[in-house]
Image 1 (cartoon, rainbow, N blue to C red):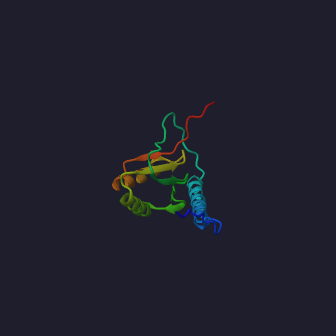
Image 2: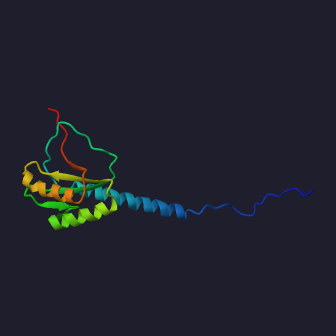
Image 3: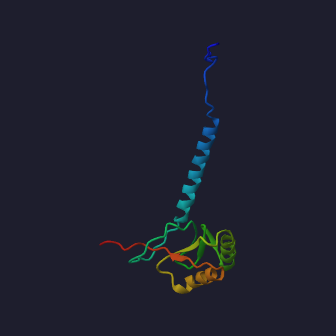
Length: 140
């Protein structure tokens, strides 16, 4: 019988290229994600204060509409009118109707008559999950 020989003809190498590619993709993903999340809250508003309420973390797809003190609407940092909001919400409802939430960030000085058209547009598009951004109750 022949005894098995160990093959020791060279050194084993590990190809690092795929791992480096994945790391770079993850870095790019997190940079873009953090930039978008900062952009969502970049508009300075004096939000109203709420005495109770918690945000539901299970909702995955949220559309944020900002209402500035002068009554102007902003969607994704861009000024938008009623027709633009309708078309944008229609597209989002087509993609994720079951998990879509409309979050309205409005200055506390904005009258209801500036917010009501947003609610009408959301209802017309079939969005039933509508929340308002508020500050929690502040401790003295």
